[in-house]
Image 1 (spheres, rainbow, N blue to C red):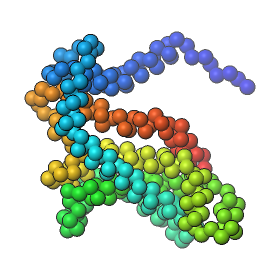
Image 2 (image 1 turned 45 degrees about the vertical axis):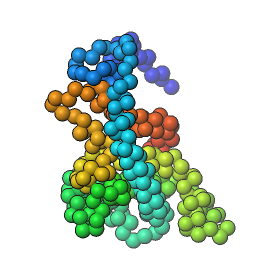
Image 3 (image 1 turned 180 degrees about the horizontal axis):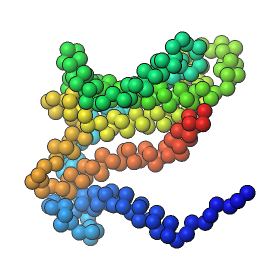
Image 4 (image 1 turned 30 degrees about the vertical axis):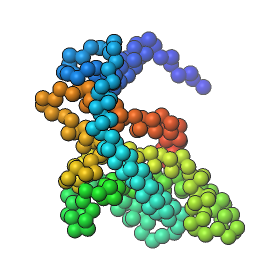
Length: 271
C-alpha cells in the first residue's frame, strides 16, 4: 500500500491561518464581553483587567430569555424524538405501501421557506390561542426537528439486524416495547444526534420567535440579543456577553456529544 504524502509546512501554515480566521469572531466576542461598556472597535486586543459588568447586565436583562430558550429547546427535543422515532421505525421496518412517498413528503417539508411556515402558523395560532406561548414555539420549532429526526433515524434503523427484532417479538414484546427496549438503545448514537440537532434548531430560532411572539412575554434569547442591537448602542460588552451566554449551551453539547454525533451521522450514511 502506498503511503499518503506527508503534509508540508505550507499546509500546516495555511491550516493555522484558516482556523485563526474562523475563530477570530469568537475570540473578539469574548474579548469585548470582558471590556467596559463602549465602542467595540476601541476595545483592546486583550482584556488586561477583565470587567464582568457586561455579564451582570446580560444576566439581569436576559435571564428570562435564556430560561425561555432552554424550555422551548428541551420541549422541541422531546416532541421531535417522541414523534420522529416511532415514525422512523415504521418507515424503516414495516412493509407500508407508499412509504417512499411519505419519506419524500417529509423531505419536501424541509425545503419550504421558514417565512412561509411562520406566516401559516401565525394564522392558525391566532385561531387556536397559541400566540405568545411557549407551547406554540415548541410546536413551531419542531417543524424542523421532526423531519430531520425521521430522515436520520430511518437510515440508522434500517441497519439493525432483523434477527434482533424477531427475538424480541418471540419473547412477547410488542412494537412499542421493541422500539423502546431494543431499537432506541441500539441506535443511541443516531438518537443523540437527532436530539442534539433538534435542540440546536430550537435554540437558534429567530424567525418563529419574532413572528409568533407579539407581546414579548415569551421572548427567547435570540430576540433578547436582537433588541440589544442598535445604531447607537453603548453596551457592546452586554451584547457580546449575551452572545457568549447564548453560545455556551450549544457549544457544550457539541463538545460532549461530538463522538456520538459523528458516529450517528456516518452510521446512517453508510447504510
